[in-house]
Image (cartoon, rainbow, N blue to C red):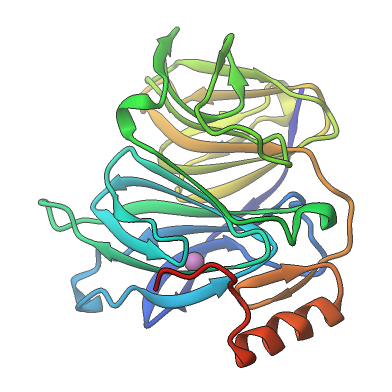
Length: 287
Ligand code: CO
């Protein structure tokens, strides 16, 4: 069974044109969450924050960015010519490969609230300069099912004999939105070498079992799970619990992050910056 190695309290950071985020971890050479690089929770619900400024056109290279919305939406467009709105329950899985330019502009929903997440997944060295690719999955094509008090939405990977709509991702990710009724439990078999983290954003509960039980009573928190071949979660007897669960195969390669780029060497970062300056960063451009 997986045990809790660490519980991370997300820190408020400002990104883009002045967007307030709760960041559990960001790209770092230590690469402790390999193959995952970053996990941000959009949290603009404090009225003191004022208008939402969003993320005007910016580049990415060497990574995949995954946007999952719960409330509100993100209007986006990119250099491949894609444009649209990611609404509640939708997923955008963007594989930057060698280069993409995109714009991401979050908007509040009817209740005045935005809730959503952005996850960055690394690409292995052999795919960092691949052609960019884009998968947008509407809410109704994401398998959602209930099992013993657990409501699960399956974005990527295989769980309970079903496979999520996002496929052909190098990190072999599992990405689930899990809501447990009070007292309900959840189990997920997982190869022991895969990285697994759970972002608890509602309710109370615990991970693993027995003496190693770690109870969470102050979400949001990122729970780092290590060892063992099964993830176990349990909502408290009185309160439901909701979390995003991410697991994937580590690449074990050195990384050099620089802003929106994550490459393997400093030379590759210098090359990306030189291409941006000379206007050759994207080969196919619709904006
Ligand atoms: Co971006």
